[in-house]
Length: 322
Ligand code: SF4
Image 1 (spheres, rainbow, N blue to C red):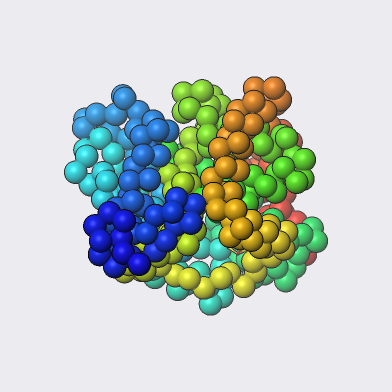
Image 2: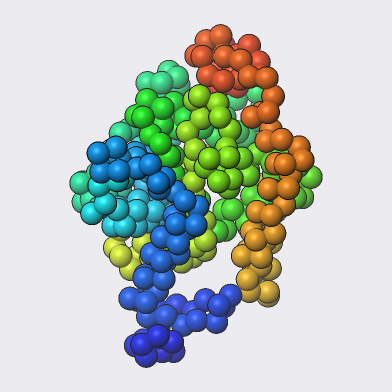
């Protein structure tokens, strides 16, 4: 098949748009979607100036999504003195997994000449995910612990590094799967929270002092296209799956989404279009989860929480008690 734009050999066909694209036009179309999302989300505040630039912290895991996001943002803003991009990698302590993806992060950061910080569960919480999985004091899936620890470190370092925005590499498939899971679980509070955390205009978000606004500029790009982009641009992405990956329900939803998309191209886009509208309505009606509840400080670490100990501190305590 030939590229619909220039007639050269196509490297991909997007069933949802009907387009066949060559390597160059495909890569440019991914760049364009990310840049359009940055613009439409007003990611760069009008108050940012060369004298007073914004700092954007990108969560860089070494997987294809965060590597592609970091590369596109770097290219987009490397000549723009109003934005400084930093990368943060979190090492969970998972044998045979994170060490290799950390190498990919370091290679990318060196190639792009980016400031890159690495933090570990071991140094921060005195534990490794491999041990958490062995001890499992709360009888939960590995990702339930890991997600709490990761969110805590992302927030903590976003603050410590004086970041104005925290950016993560969620792609269209991730977002559509999460939306579908929230629908199927009937979790309206989660839908409302989703709006407040990453969809609401930045100036309408929670005004907690320690809240660093988040954004997902890759969320219009399907997973397969992110993978193809990483391959065509020869980016140092690490593709091995985490051995503790245990979200069985998400795996079911992934299969469902793949077959829906194959039989009805455009399903992911339409789920997200409807979800964003519903999330805005849910946030208006129900408030944005914990953002609207009375927040205090965790007795141990000072993080915002509605309890005496925040979830991260109580999980760390439970793991150490075994
Ligand atoms: Fe952590 Fe689960 Fe991701 Fe593995 S798959 S790094 S356990 S959240």
